[in-house]
Length: 453
Image 1 (tube, one colour):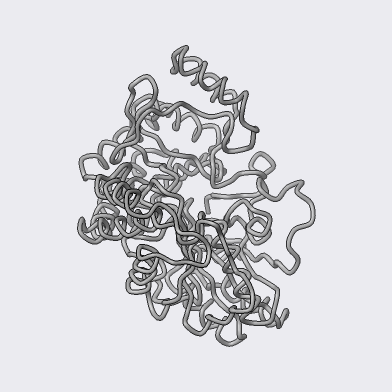
Image 2: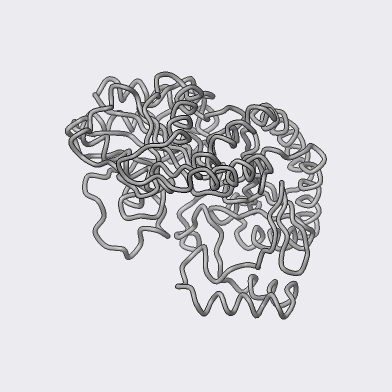
């Protein structure tokens, strides 16, 4: 079976992000970017701390609008990356209008007070969330919301251990990388949060249990084995669908939900990058017919403009009145909440969940057609407008260099996306995307792959 996220030495630090400093990056910068852009990039590299996956930067933007971005030199790219913040596209007029209106009305809500936008957004999220996830806390970013979820799980259960997945990503803070499973964030950092156990992920294309063509859900059984042996796990935390993407088998989360119930363990689902319609359902857990005890949202909640995240929890978990779970300065920022309300309105009124589901089917059919003609394509997968194409060598090993070459060839043709785990072309466009734009992007991808082959 083709390997997607193997453990070979070349890919030991492969991540959900693409590498920011390689010889091919330098070649592309020198050939594709003008002197003004290169000067700005050099200035950026002078002032910012350098870090993997981020700095030095790829290019300089001057505009982000709808489903596209535009660089300093006026070149436009369909943005199939967007950091997963652009469910409603970039700069949606209704989101901008809501922000401007709120700035004139109430620009900040100080500690110990509340405001109407915050109350209304909490109410609206409780209404659209699955099951009885009615209690809400806001935070400035997804990593912070993950931290609140971990603290609440400890308070509610009186336990301190967590079970999470290798290859997962839940944020870059110390507590988030403790439950996260990517070496690029953990390596060399030193002691992490105690009590964090990791299990193999539900990765059908590189199953460590060697299930083969018939999945036995041994990965889910292993989670229950750990819960039974540990005996005092506060919560299992996982990404409902890994945004690389890795898509769990249909019964996986139902099996995990049942195991958690049997062992008095909470279930926390992280939908920071994939919630709010990306998978063709408002929340990805709806595909699996489960309701977690806590659900974490972020990224697109602020309309692609404001940093905003939310922790949604069951009513029975409203048990932390004696401690501070978040207590963030911008917890009830009225401008951020106004952006969140406008985002929910746009998703509803423009039928973006339905659009994502429909275009996802179109994309899968087109990608299957591409795979039939291009031996470099080892695997395709998708759920709504969360899509991936894995490039593999004939022996099934990840085609890492080829994936990077395809990425830069596609950039030169006007398509932006990221490479994850070294060889997966990860495609996450705005949910306002049209079918014409989708097919144009996939045509660019096929041209770039064919050119390389």
